[in-house]
Image 1 (cartoon, helix red, strand yellow):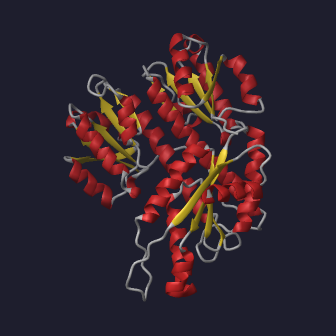
Image 2 (tube, helix red, strand yellow; image 1 turned 45 degrees about the vertical axis):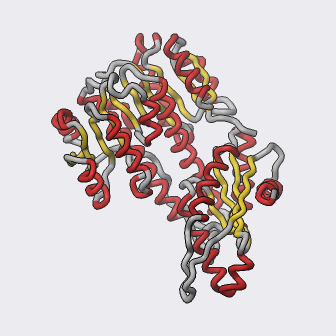
Image 3 (tube, helix red, strand yellow; image 1 turned 180 degrees about the horizontal axis):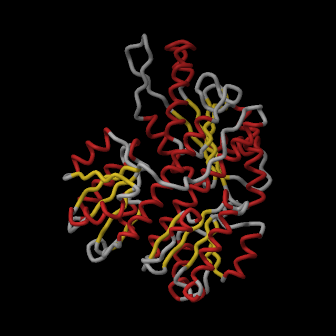
Length: 446
């Protein structure tokens, strides 16, 4: 089973909207387009959408824009809100939506490109996955008698934000004026100065005017994304369309979003606030993921979830998958040379290697991925909403890091190299937790 995330585009069909639907399909999303009345069936159906796009460029929205904003508020107030993200696209760049801002998870005002929409939809789907998996994980923890943390929702207000500005200084004054009520703007005169600031302080967003030198800006963003501490900081580019004519290249380097000039102050404020809300929501989710761990559900040696929690949780994921038709995969890791390590360093030394491998796996997986110690020197990771081919990419990345890492054990002068065997299995209809895990181990041994 390999079903894509679903996107509902609300608004009557127009040529530009058909391009959006086609672009989403090319990126692997399942999309449906309809007016408000037609969309009601999708919103209440068995397979509800993961993201709802309100198309303010549609004829229906242009005739009655407030009805679309009212729909956003209705959806946000409903029981669907925790499992659905709402995105507003198109319309006037001067559209006043301040009163409805908390009902919208993302927005792209004015003329837009399909690459922008696909990039932002991908981010919203990931956010949705993180939230859904957190709810599911807390429900599994409750079966062990572990008290759940308070429910998590996106922040309604943004206060005391800190934004780093760099690049062409011509936009600094406009940005400072636009964000004065929401954030403190810190300017950096060079990329090296910006990196120094980022290494010492926490910023909610990086705002960058690329000027006439987009290559240097994109190289800086790529360098930023290679640092795990800065991987999730939003980067918003200000650029002329003629200068940055390939947005996909910018997204590939790690840019979060792009505003094309001329940029309005209201537009910059709304876009920045949305990115900060998303970042803080992600950070809160990660904190709750960490806080939700408990000695009753954790493996004592590695701190990862234990085998019992894995089997219980997999049963719930399978039930949800059969209800929603979305996919997931599991990955298996085993230390191939554990017998040699035990013979060289004793079982205590082997356990210390196992603990270090568990720590590396736990650090490298995404927040929504469930990392577990399955047995002895074996680990299993559950990757929600991830088809096998994408899961394999994650496995290769983790295995590569471990392969090139020399592990140190106190009392032994020579570093320890670890050999892993890995396998991936995607869920297939009718799988039980045991059968799915068995298929992952069979793939590792193949």
